[in-house]
Image 1: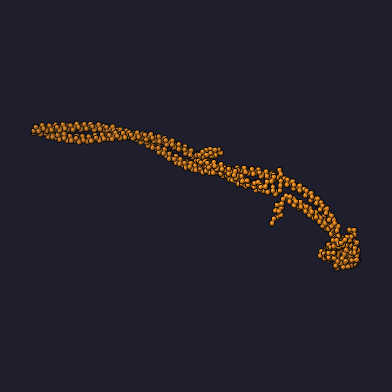
Image 2: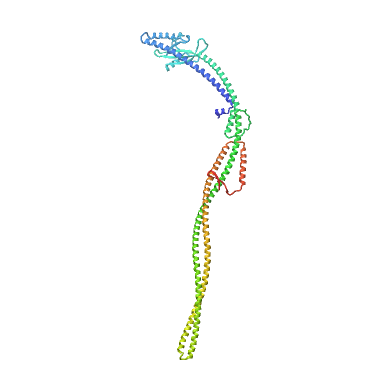
Amino acid sequence: MNSPLKMLGRMSLAARVWLVIVIVVVGLLALTVMSAADSRRLQMEARERSLGDQVASATALMQSFADRADAGEFSQDEAKKRAFAAVSAMRWNDGAGYVYVFDSGLTMRMHPIMPQRVGKSIRDEADSTGKYMYRDMLAADRRDGHGLTEYMWPMPGSKGDKLKITYTSWFKPWDLHVAAGAYFVDIDAEFRHMLIGSLLRALLVALLVIGVVWESMRSIRLSIGGEPSHALAMAGRIAGGDLRHDEAQYVPPTGSLMDALLRMRGKLTEIVGKVQEGAQAVTSAAQEISRGNDDLSHRTQEQASSLEETASSMEEMTATVKQSAGHASQANQLAVAMRAQAERGGDVAARASTAMEAIQQASAQISDIVSLIDEIAFQTNLLALNAAVEAAHAGEQGHGFAVVAGEVRHLAQRSARAAKDIKALINDSVEKVQAGSVLVDESGRALRGIIGSVKSVSDIMNELAAASQEQSAGIDQVNRAVTQMDEVTQQNAALVEEAAAAAHAMQEQANLLHAQMGYFRLEAAPESRSQRVRSPARKAASSQPPQEPAMRPLAVAGEWSEF
């Protein structure tokens, strides 16, 4: 079931304006009728108060007579007679208004206009509608002490019954009911006259309102350029991101709201299309930059790890080279000491060779002496043999001489054998001395070779020690350079990570911008344009072969450096 608000929302501007006009006119009419009815009500209340005041005056007058009777001034009957006379004299409205009295037995006790009804019962009297008005008056007085009763009753000077009101009050000291009635035909006539005049004035105001509203509606339609619902629907589509053109081409008046909305939609379509293209391009570039930064960060981290390992290896190599340089220095010192020992050994070998030559010469001399002794022993043996021969020729005289010659010969033979043995020993010693001399010469030559080698080794060790020192110094410099490279690489890695984070943030912002721009719906052209934007970048990226990381610029301390 549709609600009134939804039905009102589907109404056109003209229908709404007419509805407003009808509501205004009906409201004016209702206000006019209500004002007239309120005025009549006030007049009726005034009339009722006037009747009440008259009845209250009559009751007060009757109370004064009752008080005088109670005071003994006269009897109760006399008091009633005087009170009725005084009350009957009360008139107003040019004599049309009067007061009458009846008792609780519904018997008329006093009536200034119709004295023939006095003393008669009014219980069964009813108006033209069958209403027993006196019974209702009695019931109202008994219930509240006073009351107001409406009924139909003939009006003097007019035809037919007219509506009449009667105000009654119960005077309990005498058990009487004081009543005063009045017609309100004049009030109804004034009500009708005022109602007609008010309706005419309301009709004039309504016509004026209709004219003003109609002119305002025409001005509003011209300023809007169509139905407000159309403008609202277009603004809602634009606010909802739908920038597509309507199927029904409508040309609003120039300068109207619809014309401004159409121009705004066209401009927004152009701007959003360009922003979507730019957002797509920025997204693609941000993705490429993000991937490149991720790759660069990974490679930089690998390079930092390699440089860290290289620095550690260089530190170990530096320690090893320093140790090698120390060993080379010790080896150089040992080579120098060995060279000195070898030189001293060479000198000893030279002196030994000289001594062996001297021994060889002495052995040769001894050999000559032994040969001489051998020759002497041989000559002595020959002489002893000759002496023995001569002693044998001499006979007994030469016996002693023969004995001596035999002893001499025996000594000569022993000398010859000793000389022979000595000669053999001397020859053996000479041979051994010669062999020793040869060995000493060979040792001398070997020692001289060793001395030369030791000199060469010493020179090489000197050069090696110097080279080791230079190598140690160079490796120290390389180690410091590698350490600096490691520090720079660590800084570069941190900067690359920051660049990667910035690239990721830019990609997220680009994606967010693209998503926000995706809120607007165009004529499906931005997608093809974005594909044309993405395709060159992808083609360029796919056409380039993967390259090793080379001299990439990195931001260091706010500037750019290379590594």
